Picture 1 (cartoon, helix red, strand yellow):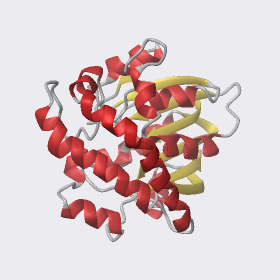
Picture 2 (tube, one colour; picture 1 turned 180 degrees about the vertical axis):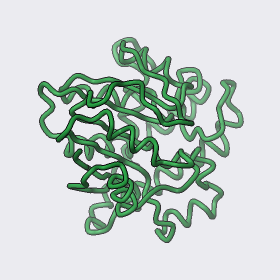
Picture 3 (cartoon, rainbow, N blue to C red; picture 1 turned 180 degrees about the horizontal axis):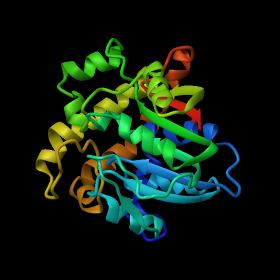
Length: 269
């Protein structure tokens, strides 16, 4: 399953519907990265595959994560240093105006106060530079969110302090940091979100409890090689049915005009 010719992180990514949509959506906001200095910050739920694919789009990248549990796995794949960031202060260990492009993937919903990290994202961005922020959609009235709560998959199970932020809320956070929102988008409509819920529910409520590898609270999918090996039989079954999952996810096109369950705001400094 985890052969040398293809890292296990990449194999998982190629069976991860929502993460593939995430990278595709962010890529549209990134634009031409030739000669650009880029920063990606994340907050757990990251084995390095997202970094790997964003790096392939061009630019020179620097990495940081507010959780240390999977940094060794990320560094193994990337063969580059990943900075361990301070979640309490939100401080980033980089000088002012360092980066042309700064990307924050699913960080803000983990923080009691998301303003300090927003200010830091702005501080390390060059004047005229681009800041891209993604979070889950915080609209609690959306059907999939209500279903998640009914089956016990609350924000806490995802390691979040809140469900997320809707686009207007993210844009307001950007403005508070001195950034000017210039574009927004969303991804993962109802069908993809429900498929992800099935996968996350099975891992959190069943597989993680039987796992021989330690699984921290708030972990919704394997983030280390040991965690993946511990559920390898179940993962093989999922890999077999993945084509069916992908086919069902394409029903999201029927919901094209609606806002997805994950949102993106692009802003300029």
